[in-house]
Image (cartoon, rainbow, N blue to C red; front, side, top):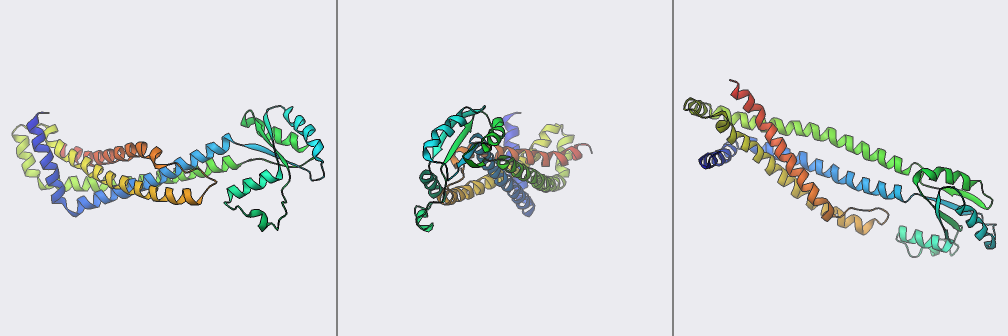
Length: 294
């Protein structure tokens, strides 16, 4: 496309956006809301997936030693555990170490005084499997050993987390599909009003030999600019909100991993801006296709 065409296209696109006034604002606002919600759900899903993966990779079988078992028998129990098929490593965790872990998890360095100075936790063995598929079998075998009164592992935890992630993902797709339709509709309405307002001018251009592409480009560009403006606003709001939420959650939650903004913003920016361009392009193509058939 020649340079003079660009000098015509861009001013016409901005002029149309200005003339449409409230409809332009409504289209941009709808795109902003749509893409902001998309970013919101996407950031939740990313964090859920990260935590689900960490839990899955760190599933351990916790074997609690009976209080009546003397410490001299611990070595024999540990050796038996190491010989179970699928066991990668066995780590002894004293009740004092277990208490320290609880204090770190709940951010309470004075937990023992709350328990009136008596540590009720048992000694235990933390068993790591060579692969997660062995965890269930290891737990069943450990539960049958003498001196072990209880076995616990993260059965169902990862599955529940993935189920929740999948539910959030499906809900976000439905919401974004509906809002995307609304955004495309408003963009199409804005472009249609512009076309109707300049119908005579366009017909004269066609009679003078203007190509369909020359006529189409200003409206197509207008639709994409509506999408880009809405995407920029949505991205700015999402990044500001996530930055605030990240600071709050990292200061108050110690048992979950919160993905830092520095790892999120590159892919999020590409996704949101790209979605804005696509929504704008689709919204402009609908009325253009109809007009050019007339």
